[in-house]
Each structure stands twice: as C-alpha cells, then as structure tokens.
Image (cartoon, rainbow, N blue to C red; front, side, top):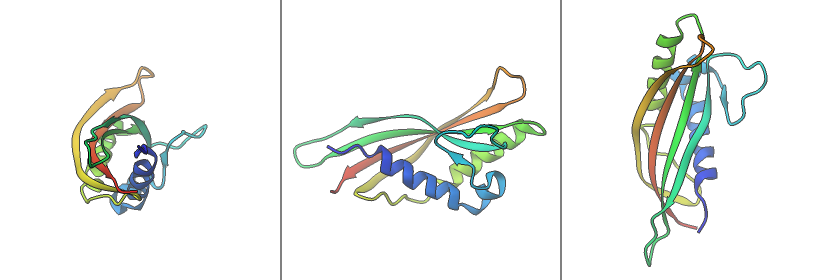
Length: 135
C-alpha cells in the first residue's frame, strides 16, 4: 500500500498557491516548514492522519489534513477568519492527485485560537478525503 499523504499535500499546496483570492491575502506563503522571520499572514501544513480502509479489491485510505492560518495585528482576528474562509473556498473544487482517485473531499471544521504571545491568531482548517490507490 502506498501512502497518499505526500502526493495529496503536493496537490493541496498547488491548489492553495494557485487560488487568486487566497494569494491576495497570503501571496505564495504556504509552508511545510516556516522560514525564520516569515512575513504574516501565512499558511502552514499541519497535522493529519491516514487510515487504511482496504478490502479485497481496492486499496483505499481515509486522510485528514489540517491547514493552519497564522496572522498578527492589525486586524489579526478578522484576517484569520477571512483567510480560513478563503482556504475553505479554495478547497471546494475536486483535487487531482497523481496515482490516486479522490472519492470524497470535504471540509470538516475550522477552529480559531489565540496564541500565548498575545498577538498571533491561529486558525486550524480541517479537511477529510477518501482516496483510492490507482497505481
């Protein structure tokens, strides 16, 4: 069984960086690892998991992915919620993932958090995918 998470992440990052509305907010600042002194706002790839859901004929996985939105003043809370909404909108169209068929792609939830530094606002936007392995 192949793990779909790397190719799925590649497709998600391409989608987010290619979305016009989202790019107006975060430019191309979608990171796996945040560079030192990164400019706010930005997105990071967060946690997730892959669950096997195979049967005799099909290699299938259920994948959850979290995307993180990071903002700071001015208007950190408003910007965080706007960008989280843009992430959700960008992820509505079906993804093409090399070597896999995406059967289910759905928004699960958004969480809004205040970070301990008293300035940074943080949203966690979670998605669920059911993916069939084709190669």
